[in-house]
Length: 155
Length: 155
Length: 90
Length: 90
Image 1 (tube, each protein chain N blue to C red):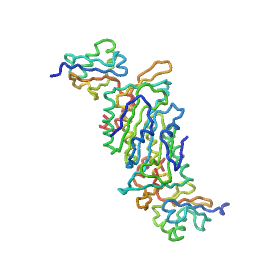
Image 2: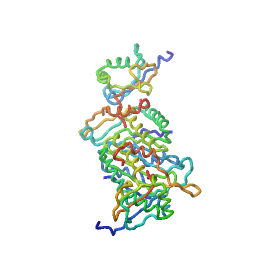
Image 3: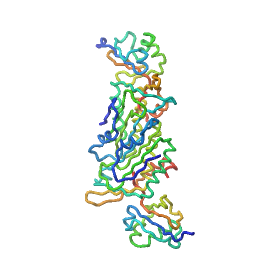
Image 4: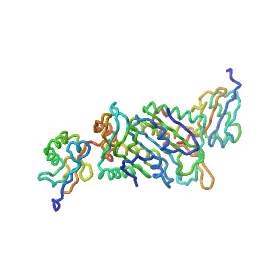
């Protein structure tokens, strides 16, 4: 039921929303999160960010967690699009959409899915500075704490 | 700083996102909620929903609460669009966008703003049935409970 | 009280508007009406539409000058007072 | 153990890939390697790139057959084992 894609191309939020809700009149609300590339990391300006992933694992893992979220919050639909490759500041990185009969479920599922993507989906970000050097982003402990809130389902 | 509009016309989420983030590279995430018209109320099919509001009060009240949310969650931008008039099942009713450096703030602010809109913004919905009769929607106690979670700021 | 001549504007929304039969009216602050609660008592006896609108006072909310206001809120000449059911937007 | 001939596939991502110098390699399950932890010990002494990749074992995560796996996870011929840093997507 979930739409899951990992792609280099950008995505259009309205088009994804339209696809999620097409022909449906039982949806009361859609929660949404769009992640974007910031121009600085720890105060240092970045020129770009490159995302790598583990293709054989990524989509199945996201699909599984989206299925769990759908059950847990009675979702009527769910979309996850995650970009990979080189992205410049301001670019969209990730989209989560969760549709439900009521807003509480839609927003809780959106929150859960983005927390899970940040802590359990096999993506790695490398930041590139103006001088051409780069560093792999280190995982943030606050992200693990955010995912741990959800209990077993996030593991 | 907030963009607030009450209008009969539909809205385009991508266009609102683009306007919110135009020229900015300090945003890390945008939380979003889209409310839509459901085809049934308490099990009874509805043909349409008509939204009435208190024009002199609505936009200033939303603008004030958006300003509070911006302070509380260090928002980098915020958009609220609420439609009025006659809307059929599947139509978009309300849009909330909240942009922040990090996802936690963006999603918390989105949640707060939609809870507040449901319980404190002067809109009233009238459901219209297939036979032409209609009823004014009664306020749900769960909505008040959702708004009460936020403490003083929601009052 | 330099302003006693300015009328009160009273607005009605949703089913209060339907029952009262008008969306807006203006009149001088009636003698003895100092608060929102006083105004409700004054309106409720104006006729059957008003009586129906204010029959269940617990279902009526009020704003004075575009701000939510309790029944105890003071009224002044020139105020805009709105009566409406609990809100159901979003 | 009908399948001892099938090689193990080992994948490296992010800075582990950079340090090891390859994204993927395949070899028969070495004698004495029964778990992920055994494989890490085996790889860490293969050369300076491997040694650097596995120097801080607390920073290395593993998946076996596309599922996150602890150091104690058993390995079998034909498995796909991936090593990578803690994830940073989203």
